[in-house]
Length: 66
Image 1 (cartoon, rainbow, N blue to C red):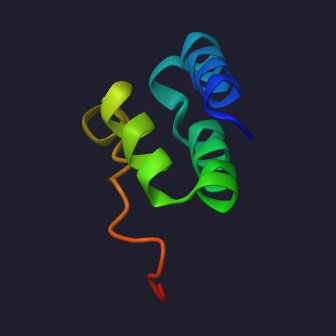
Image 2 (cartoon, one colour):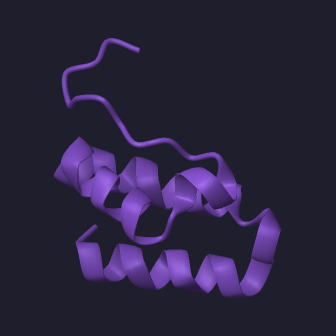
């Protein structure tokens, strides 16, 4: 998934689900991490303030064993 598509999907989830958008956003985040890596995820987390609003933290590294 490219970043523009990810942004649109996150915006759509926020509009549709409001404060309950964490689950659909996490699905987008997981797909972005798989396709583009942790730095792309961190960009989205920061851009949409996902850590504060939905408790979705930035990722440490692409090489995590968690």
